[in-house]
Amino acid sequence: MPEVILEAVDLKYSYPDGTNALRKVCLQVEKGERLAILGSNGAGKSTLFMQFNGIYRPNSGCIKYQGRDITYSNKALIELRKKVGIVFQDPDSQLFSASVYQDISFGPLNLGLSEEIVAARVKQALIDTETTDLVDKPTHLLSYGQKKRVSIAGVLAMEPEVIIFDEPTAGLDPRHALEFMQLLKKLRDSGKTIIISTHDVDLAYSFSDRIAIMCSGEIIGHGEPSELFLQSDLIQRADLALPWLIEMHSELVKKGWLPPSTPLPKTKEDLLRNIPPKSDQQSA
Amino acid sequence: MINIDCYAYSNNLRTVHPVEKSLFAMSTMVVCLTSTTVITPLIVLAFMAGGIIIRAGIPIRVFLNLMFVPLSFLFISVLTIAFSISTNPSGFWLAQTIKGLTIGIHYPDLITAIHLFLKSLGAVSCLYFLALTTPITEIITVLHKMKVPVIITELMVLIYRFIFVFMETATTIRRAQSSRLGYVSMKSSYRSLSRLFTSLLGKVFVKSQELYNAMAARCYTGEIKVLTKKYPISFRNYILIIVFELPLILLNLLGRS
Image (cartoon, rainbow over all chains, first blue to last red; front, side, top):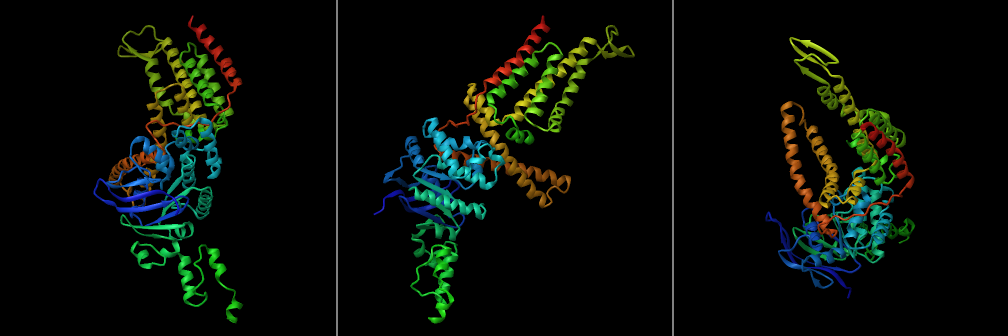
């Protein structure tokens, strides 16, 4: 039984204007897993993330970190935020300083670390996000993708156990999106738990170990990507589409190019490998 | 203003310790403002121009354009000092009497005016030296080291950052408006501009809340603590500053006595 690191229990939250953003959300996040939260715009993904970090306080229900309730005292909140880092969608609302270096050092300094350790962590975060050459530039002269990477570095430098990315690839070009995915892979290999929110089904499908689908403030389904995407009614209800890999695979199976026992491909390479060469087809 | 900001990050004196640059600019400004002769401001002006153009590598055109900015204000204020109106025509150095009223220049007033003019230009050039070679973020760090209250330096950090965020937002809104002919006539321009400000105000509130949330997520507890890049301290620069300032201070003292 894998250890549950972060958990939402019967979470309900409505905004002051009366919008019911979360209606009874239950979700368990396992240690070391890659969880993708899929949902259309306004499904409540970002609101849920704010709960995980203790920024919003639920109307009822609770958040548990390693099995313990969050008490929302200042000390408990700082402990939680030490362990759970969040990279916001809009880097402009995350970067508060015009200096890249200062901004990245903000989080680790708040943890009460010594200047030497902070300087070392900032350096490592700069290397991990490939932003070392941006360090002398002011944040307002950076491109969107560069700002995004700096805001990621600001969270990495705090070395949290769980890292939450809100719409991480929105607004990134394909090359930087790919680089970002590689960074995620590296983080996962170092044992971090990663949660991302997205409405990019292809990304969620190839990236994650587990997917949770959100629709108007509720989690309407969760499970392994390959199982979840076979429930087409669920996907439709959440205003999502099928990943192209699955669509292609089922079409190939339907038309007899692949035997029905072929496992679902996880990546483009898997799919291409599954397709047999032409000579085989003729002899069969 | 944006130009100044860009040069602050890309000039040749970028790697010099910000404390050294601030000390140089500020002490020279004080020396210039307390000068008693016309020579000091002229020397200051020449050195600052040299520092900005030759050492920092700022294009001469940029520097001259910047120096022209305060010139119009200066001329007006200097003229009111130099010229006087009086019913008594005696004592004027250069004058014109019309119907019993004499308009003209007293010689000591002229000297005062010229001195004031050069003093102001010299002081302005010191400020430009600092602004063109040192990014605001580093100036804020220097202020922090000088024990300026945290509330002021923190506000400076946030204001400086958000000037650019809001400028970008405003530019985007304006572009969206003009692409729909929002500024086609005087009337529509006024209307579009007022809407721009309204929506900008709304965005200010949203952005500030988002910023607070994002900072809280990184364990913000009410004090913005940041680390600044370390710069090498150069004793040579300190000695140069002393060698430069001392004769000027002596000159000031001699002029006084």
